[in-house]
Amino acid sequence: MQLALKIDVDTYRGTREGVPRLLDALKRHNAQASFFFSLGADRSGRGIFGKAPRVSRLSHYGIKTMLYGTLLPSPDIGRTCADIMRSVREQGYETGVHCFEHVRWRNHAASKDAEWTQREMQLAVERFTEIFGEAPKAHAAAGWQMNRDAFRLTQRLGFDYASDTCGTHPFIPTWDAEIIACPQLPTTLPTLDELLARNGITLENVVQHLLAFTANPSATGHVFTLRAEMEGGKWLPVFEQLLDGWKAQGYDLVSLRQYLEGIKDTLPRHAVRMGEMKGRVGVLAIQAEP
Image (cartoon, one colour):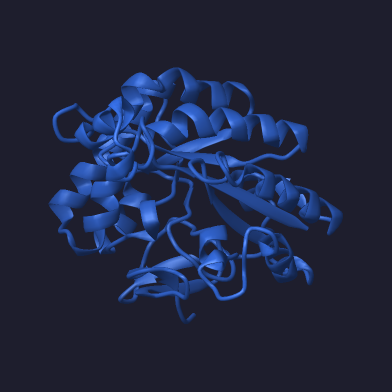
């Protein structure tokens, strides 16, 4: 049984602090994973300094936080954290493209046209190639935000697979009956923040709730998405409890590429639609009917 770990890295802080912590945790648990990087400017407003403090607690730290992204320039993640990104691959973990600018893609991708979409994805591919010396072979869209042209580009840009959707099992995507020749490995499990949005679930019991989803093995395994900012930060102990729990359930903790290589059957075709999901605000790309 395989459970693939997909790590989204959204911000400067997540790259700088969360990624090294997650690497250490994965090594401790003998687990593999795939890291997907945001490669341009961090315009989240909390890339370096963290969440802005309340006004009543303003300090030199707080003033810098409020200025960040307005008077202070947004840090360019790919330029300033290239060594950390390369270290992920050097330590034997898969790397891929999350996006160029996380906030811009998350907020606008679903409604943008072909020209905008191609520019954003091309920027990400070029920056990845600059950092790693070769073109990326995997894509995982920020916030599961996609459009028709973005799906087409996963094929045209030469990705071996993408993980841009939420669903139940690997598939070949179609959009309005147009076949996209790039396999989708959807996120199949709820994320920690989705579970914590539900009544009665807390950090103290979220592990048992998530392990309940994986107690009865799926024939096609699972994909779990985590974020370097959260599971690589204050939720790291929870993540390590999950790793222990999944190993106890008999899962091999693998990268998405290893997961894809383990698929023996021909992948079915499924439509993709933009829809709502419990615990998430707004719409996202969802695996729909065959």
